[in-house]
Length: 442
Image 1 (cartoon, rainbow, N blue to C red):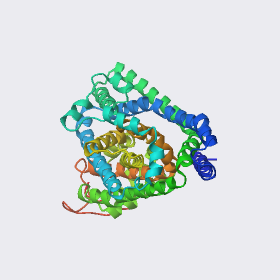
Image 2 (image 1 turned 135 degrees about the vertical axis):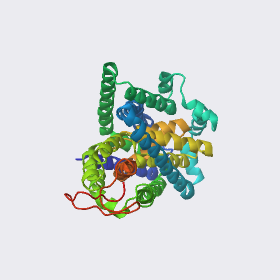
Image 3 (image 1 turned 90 degrees about the vertical axis):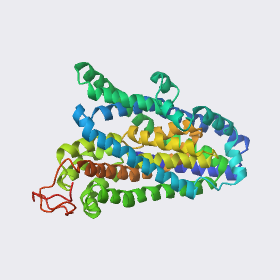
Image 4 (image 1 turned 45 degrees about the vertical axis):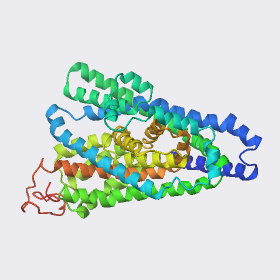
């Protein structure tokens, strides 16, 4: 049985058992309290702690490898600079789009006050305390706090911004220092990344049990009302992903890439289908490179570089998903986030999109860490992880499409088309073997 099927079964069993206990005995019954205290809460907490345990090595190693993989200093300065600027700008726009939708539609709000009071019992004080001590200050102080005085301390205290900044600098240093010693260090970081990914895979294998326990905890206390909240959350995530995929990306392809959006989507549909079925940017990479060179006719020197780094760094869909999920859970738990705190969420999600591993469920550890930063109880992950597999398929499709859009934009100016037509001409992709023309001015 496939893992996502087991997760869905585990989630369904947890929901059914929790609702049954809620309706038959009530949330305050001694038997329900005993099961929560001695069984489901410990199991859920162990699952969450396993995720937290692997966050620091996974994100740090992924960022170092992604940035250092840009190659020699000239490539890093030209193509790498264009790509990073594009990635930060578009990922930030994507996250802002998601947060605007969450603030407008309020998928986490509308819960009855008495139900919310039960949910927040014992957690509100902890949430507000963490928010006061962890959330970075707005304005210039935020920029100062991004730079850690001690990267080891930042990692130990869960300072995600400081850890990511240090990892970015290490990646740049590796790219600019091609010596035998740094090559050995890069191999060690690769080993750390591979070990972290293997352990993440093993932890995710426990997800059916962890999800069942976490969802039982929620539904036993809240009943079926929590399912309505979950449906609204899924709807907002899908709406945000659809707007980015079919409105924002076509505009970027047209205005910045000078390519027909219809021609672009016809050329990349094979990669989109592969991404949807595998839920992995890394697994889709061979197909992504193939369609970029054969269908979109992008220059290989640009497409291979941008798409390889993009599989590790350019995760628009993951960043959007992380931002929407964090704000949804903040609304769900009644944790009010100010505009400066939401701006912090945007910044962390942009960096989180860079650091997210291009594998199934790679966003879950990042979401857990951001929740801890802004003071939202991490137990809420149990609410969304049951539907994460389907949403993962959708956001991976957006990630891969975003990589191809980035390749189109970066390739423009690096390679001039050889077909007829002056500036501004736009041409459709030709059949393979028809040299001399490309799908638009690149």
